[in-house]
Length: 127
Image 1 (tube, rainbow, N blue to C red):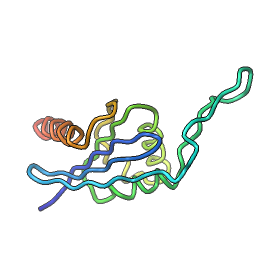
Image 2: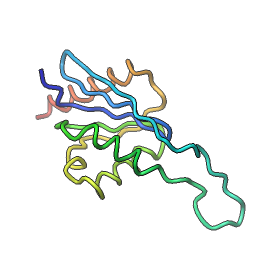
Image 3: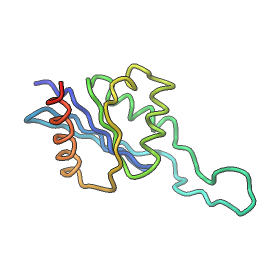
Image 4: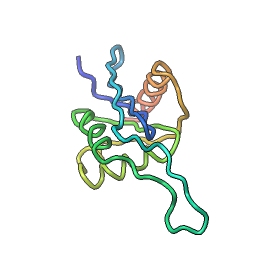
């Protein structure tokens, strides 16, 4: 059995990484070690008021999917884009495998899996 597809649902606190095929799946959750969830921005101060994601966290997520052939990245905010940028800078071979990026709020693991199966089914039909 080969689990060639991977879906990553990511936010600033945790990533749900799921590997799937037509009839099987595996999952793991990777959490950030950073304790700073929010950065407050003062009026008139320079900067975006955002705290960048921990690079070790992003690296752990990328390492989890290195053997996957196709990767879908989903999530509610900017974390998914930060993950993709990190992949392009630090592991371009994994970045090449990213076939989709979509905004999805906070689904359950079951909903993530259903979303990914539908996405990859459509993608495979186009090939």
